[in-house]
Length: 199
Image (tube, rainbow, N blue to C red; front, side, top):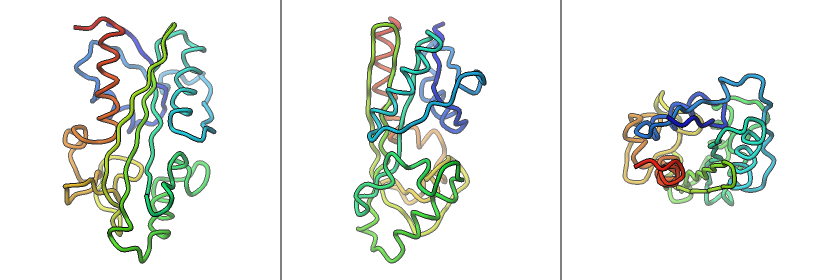
């Protein structure tokens, strides 16, 4: 059993990623189990930059193989905003609801074809002598008002392409088959199998 650290304190993200990697013989710890480790400030201009910074920083501090991701929502008619600012779109340390409310206000009066968006996720893995990246996207659209109680972040206002339910309405096992994070971590899973020599 190999131990890795997931460089996040977001319980929703921890649950989702553990579910995505649950068939690998990995002991996945999160930063929730390491309260003394510092908060990694994400100031990068790209998902790749932020994901690598988190993984590198935690690996340097712990010398334990570290996995991280940076992900967000890109609305095409808003020049791909909120993008890397997704978690703090309405300000620092705000609620998911505040971010959703700000985005919906910006899109008020927009036609459905102007509400096209995608979730994008970049995952990073850092261990001694290795840095790996993987990426996944999930296309869809932003609906008029929040629906559903599952998931986290923008899930209640994002409807993936080909579905009539939001990420917050879909069961986790369905979301995990086609979400941006699922796609990025499916690729990362293959990299982890090779790195840890898992058959």
